[in-house]
Length: 414
Image 1 (cartoon, rainbow, N blue to C red):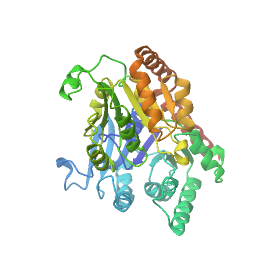
Image 2 (image 1 turned 90 degrees about the vertical axis):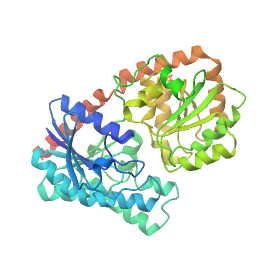
Image 3 (image 1 turned 180 degrees about the vertical axis):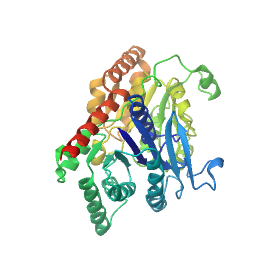
Image 4 (image 1 turned 30 degrees about the horizontal axis):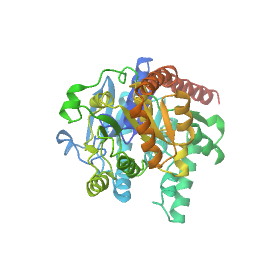
């Protein structure tokens, strides 16, 4: 099979979409398929291009033997709906040229286009329509529904327009792959046949993330020797209710050894740093985002990992990918989530689960884990065994390939 990904985000950027696409591409490649990627120049989430990318309109890179065709796009920091939308709109145009360049090297049997947003799906639809190539719409977020639920989109006309485009793109796709069952159920309720829906959850490269001894070098360099580290590593965005984590930290000031450590960037970080300073939270530490090769080191420094989401009904359908990495690394979790994520964490026996945005319960869970090293050890072992059994990227990659094979065979015989 010859596969081309079209996606706004890709390695070496840090984040769940980037990790998912790169790791699945490796699985596809190792299974004997030709794989290429069409994407932007790395800039997420800072909105700053690397020096070697400035002034370059297009380039072919290679990552782990996978051809990566990069296109120029408007770049902006990961804040501000309008600027972010302009960035996606610019890639909607440049992606057409990127697909054409990639197709000269890998004549695709299928284009996999990963959303959000669905502007890149418009690119895939038009390019594939003019060349007779099927596309698969991969849904990682329900867009625009998430912005409606968060109150960012309020215009009823704009919402109806975007939803009409969304449904059009679902129906024109050969198939729709979602990252949660709840997403698939939502799309099915809107009239898309179940036969066109497949589910491939996020997972983890269990060889990259594994339990290990505490990283003493990192601990010393970050002034965390002797500390009990409660780690949040990831995007500091509107989805994660990180202000409630500050509330939890304030409730644990009496535990001198506890440090809440936030690693990453995002739209909310500046306000979080200011809020912690204003409240005099000496047990809260902020660090910049780190390269992907350093993420596993931070997990080996963590005593507990935080997996929070906002208390918004739509987020009951989300499964934060960081929870698979934490389990693979043997880090006990405090999850403030509901829905499918809660079900998975309950089955894993690797987490204490509380209601979203319940700062008192989060603080109580951390306090319990500080006092019970035996429970932490049991949870660490359970989490690792759980992801090895059900959520390795290799297992999920073969599920994905089976779904694609079925849809392509049906198309050929239809």
